[in-house]
Each structure stands twice: as structure tokens, then as C-alpha cells.
Image (cartoon, rainbow, N blue to C red):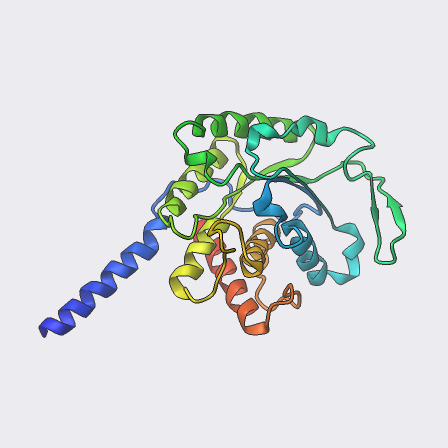
Length: 271
């Protein structure tokens, strides 16, 4: 083997190791919500959720596009505070009657008063972007992951944790956040949505596809769509590949993001 070939081979091995190092983590215990996936969700988090007309609206559009005959049965609500961590949210209050999600509007702007036995089937919760791994805040993350999961369950809903992504200039956050969220999910018997791992996959395979705002933290439209595809797959167990809902993205870009979301969830959940 020539010296040049050896150098190229070594470089390829190094890249492969770096790409997959994010997967060296605790394995999730909960890998599916089963056939009766949630039809009503509350997203509890911060600006990572509300950028680009809010992630919940894109997830809802994807779910409805996948089942147009029953589109009215799917609902999603977002409760977000900019910069917030788990402890900023009074989750108990979000389940009080005749308040959040008590009414909505249809496509013709007619008001619909919601009358359902259970306010939400699931609560998708995200801590602040670095709180789970911050030396002064990670214990708060652990404490409130349990506290909020218990509150959600007490109201008959499923707690779900949303694994956020690394900052563009701090890729080492990927593995740290993945580990923190997976450990918290296992400790609380909760599903974890591996959005952060999907970001890492796209950045490794197609770095020219921009997933970030100029601040290197918040998601671009492509980033929000990628995360929404991961949420859709985690909740339903279905592949987002071929979804007609593309959030205004071109077909080629949406296809790349859909495929990355599906691959990520299959790998993370060990399917």
C-alpha cells in the first residue's frame, strides 16, 4: 500500500470514527409508543421549539398529511418561554381545565370548543439548550425531568423528552446531550426523541445543508423541518420519507431530511 493510499485510508477511518462517536452512549429502554400513538400533544420548551412558526405546527401538518381522513382528530399545542429550562415551566398549570387548548380554530376560522376526555395524550418536553450538560444546571435537569414526568403521568398523558442539538460551533455537545437525555428517559420510563442525533447525521453527510440561524444555535427552516420529521417518526413509528408536507422546502432538500430522520430513529431505537 503506497504512502498516499495509507494517508487517505487513515483519514477516512478518522472521519468515520468522529461521525459515529455521537452514538457511543447509553441505549434507550423505551423505543416505541406502540400502535396507539398520541393524537394530542403539548410541546413544552423554549425558542428551539417556537422558531419558524413553531415545531408543533409542522409535526401536526405531517401527521394530518399522513392521515387526511382523520385530520380533525389530531391536535397540538405549544407552550414556550424564550431561554427557558425545565424549572421555568409550571407544568401542573398546563393541565388545568378550561384553559390551555380549551378551544381552537378550524381552516375557516370558526371556533371549536374542545371536548375531550383527556386534555393531552402526551407532553413533549425540552430543557434549555445546554442545561442538561451544564455543570451548574444538570442536577436541575435531572430533578425536573422526574418531577415533570410524574406530573404529566398524573394527568393521564405520556411524558416524552426532546433531545436537542449541538451548537454549530460546538459539535461535542451532541454526544453529551444524547447521553443526558437518554439517561433521563430511562430513569423516567419515557421515550426520547433523538433530534440532536439527526442534526449530527445531516451535518456529517451533507454539511452544505444549513440547519442553523446565523447565531449557530437556533434552527433554520431546514433544521425545524428535520426535527419535526424526527418527532413524527418517534411518535408514530412511521417513516416520514415521501411525506407530501415539506414546509415550503424543495423536494430534494426535504427528501434528504426525511431520510436522515428515519435513519436516525431506526439506529437510536435499535430497529
